[in-house]
Length: 200
Image (cartoon, rainbow, N blue to C red; front, top):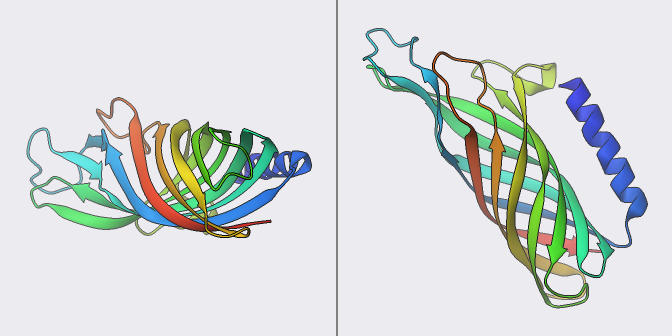
């Protein structure tokens, strides 16, 4: 966890050094997880054959800082928190609260110029996700990190010279946490969000 945070900080510092302009935003939305079975349910008493442990959909809160590096290109870095549940198929079916912390760095390609009122964009980059099971805390280095790639797009709309709104659709691809029995494939987290930003 400490190494991941240090690496993320280095990326932040290098991006700031290249920046020509700056914007910051906060977004809220939903986090939809696909291929969300992370292994067999061997924890529920009397669990049925083939019962799984899954991560459920939830809400997402994201903070982003953006830098316009060229007329049609930029970069973003940020932090997001997604609230999910750890679902046990059972029987009995049970669920427990589950947190996912995420740091990301993305490159952006814009369809319009920097001063345009409406700026559709495509985005792609890398991220790490810290999966924090019930009873654990990311603050104390608990949980498990998974690294991955993300891609998607959105649009930013200027309300005034200083303020803007944004809409994002992203997919975050990563390995499944905790190495449970019969976990297979990749985990996909899909973000659909809207936010408000300040342009400097």
